[in-house]
Image (cartoon, rainbow, N blue to C red; front, side, top):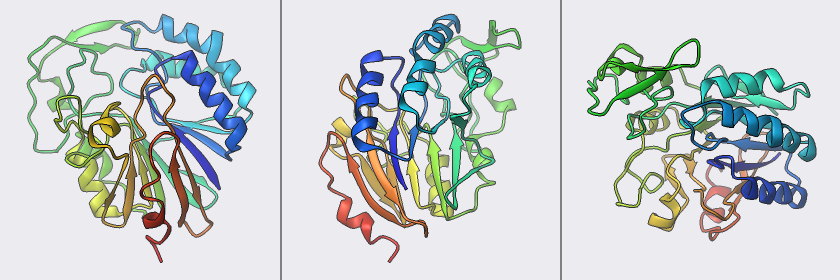
Length: 279
């Protein structure tokens, strides 16, 4: 099967239009979007207007199954509204429960480690032993989609990313996780500081899935001049995001082997490596 992966389009219609054109030329069997579908907003209304005025039409025009996860900029009410609007059933939401596609389990996970963003709906402590006290005011959506101030240590009462990911154990799987793994080349920001998740890296090292797909740190490929890394037997990818569409096209055979993998902007420098990674 041929897949097309993008992340962090942030409601940019020019990027979505470029993606639509790429879908026509590449003809993938499925599109995967790794979070942050919508522009950042403290309110869900602009995101819902984007769903109604553009995104649903985009889904109809491409006519291809789409698999998504929310990102930290996607409001919970917007995602719930999108689920209700999905009359065509062409849109699928990936979760930790797993979705089988052509014999391969696809996993989705949205939460990121604590960040400078004030809205914390999709944030968690990274490791189980972490104790977090945030300095800036923290906002969390309540059941009425109103933002409320919460205690700066509220993350300590929630499961960590490490605890959430501990249920994963299937090697014949592809993970779509918004945060990249910490400490490699996929999570370097403009200050050349690693901003990824240690828990995600630990989970990849433990399970060794076929492939992991990430986003969140838009500039990582520009900073490291690379968009993929090997973690044991696993290939991990962050295509990045900019004013020019950045996407990855990959093909998986029935046994779960990576046949080919290419970036639409950067050099396909890992292609020959990944072809033989499970031989």
